Image (cartoon, rainbow, N blue to C red):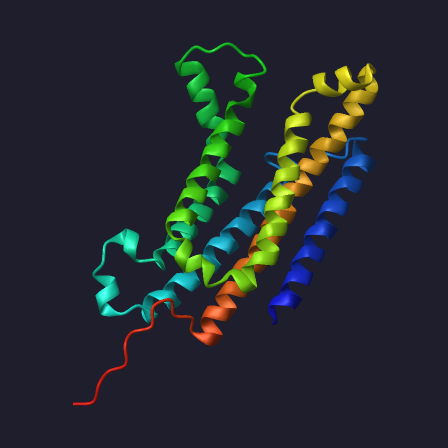
Length: 242
């Protein structure tokens, strides 16, 4: 399957799930966000997509590792640029476990209890701060191994930029829908504020699934290019005849 066809199909699939989930929530409860969030089928779909991205990263690493020369394999880890794919495979596998096991939520509760912190709008955002720390760690890894990733920018750039754009919009929706206070302040109407909160929570859930599909398409394109064209970042010098 071509990378463009895979991109169109995975985006269409995620959009279909999003529309179905919103309609189901409205039909069953009147709340469009009812079937987004922890413990819902969308959580397990999100985890499956994250695991798939991790699996693609692992496949890229195995191919790139075979391409690496013996000399490169002896270098320190930070100089083995292709190891970024192994780190990303581990990172996405952890995110999948976090999605299902609510790891960052448990860390949130542990910190609040351990430090005896009061419940207020600031501590309510602690789990978001933990998730942001995941992102900062990921960006640090990408920066360290940027040389490897730049070779894939042609096939990965479009879906990755679209995915990060969706994540940013999802973060805004999540911030706005943390509770009803923002919309109540904005509208002065509590019932309307609750409706807006439900819609923005649904948008936040949608903008979690869709970026994962876009990232999956980017990693699929990178895997396909690695497999078919045998990308080498530092080709070994030709062996001179004896």
